[in-house]
Length: 164
Image (cartoon, rainbow, N blue to C red; front, side):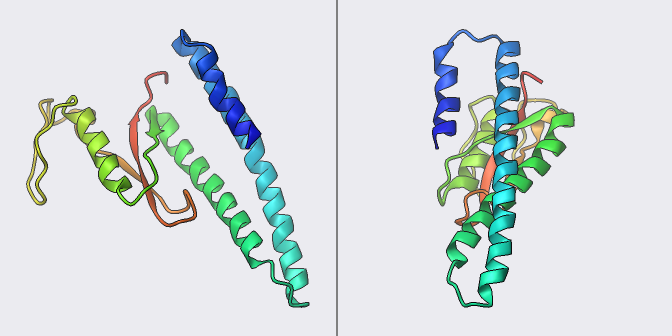
């Protein structure tokens, strides 16, 4: 938990960060997170091994094993998404994890397509953006995360990476 607080505190120290400095900091943070994910994967593998050994003895450690598996699955899912988005110069805009995340992700996408001023949305109705219909920015791109929080499915918004 301390690692996450350190990362969150760093951006507030330098409020006039250039795009390149921010990108450099972002890459360092990704490396730190990647190293942490590797540690968690190793820990999860050890827990699985212990589980198999203690299962024969009837030990009840299933909750710890489930939590380790969720962390590991989340790391794998995030890594796959990052590999897909990087060549497309896209990144994920995190949406608050609640029961409205799908709607909030779509709302975020519509704000991008319509430049922040979009009409009230009605189910089943088709809308056209103010931009050219062939423009790559006229598509909405919510992202589906099966293992994001361990409480079920989650949706985020995929946006252009302005520093990419």
